Image (cartoon, rainbow, N blue to C red; front, top):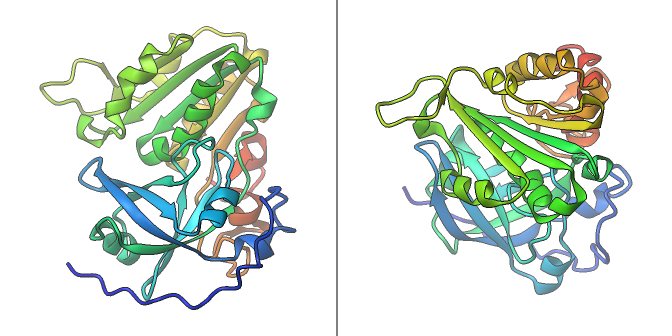
Length: 302
């Protein structure tokens, strides 16, 4: 499939003068700028997901660009549209970002057909982030289901790169089938890190699978921790939040210590199109990261 790419308009280079302070509404005038970028590498993860390495072209913009784990960017394929994608790379990494994109529509389908050197645009970063600063000195449960490992990968990087700031880290990941597992080439590396535990489970094993079988909540049964000194980050399909977070609540973890990422029909990233609103709450501005107590008080959030 060939993709016809249209050139960008000339942008005012004075729009961005300093790094973002992540005060969302006040800084939207800055993150609305489109960074000219290009795809530098594409890694096929599964039949439906690919990992894109993307580099901002301008050296000064590249140096100023920063994000916090849990935030997302709007990825533009010139002439076709843009889509919101959670950032999957380390927030300490400069020079490029990594985006795990599932082939699910027109723009994502066209992105899957793109090769290295394809020009793209980036807006952002947008949204709230996981409050990892609050979790210092505490146990951290990093729980993902299916594609949820993509937004969870950034906080995993943060925790593993700053392990001395946390008491303990436990990564729990579940998928439908072994062939649906993302980033399987990193599992052994995570397991080798002292102080990090990793458990993986699938619902429908194949003949080669020799790991856990069942629902992701089963992996919580064998975990012991001080509930008041434990935080949880949960990413995955919304239906999973009820089962996982309710199970964690039953284990004694306060709902204000659980954080989830809601990706709900986001379109502009700036609260202008009103496609992601839940009542008066906009997922793209007030989220996508919420504590579970807030989610339960948002009608139809999950």
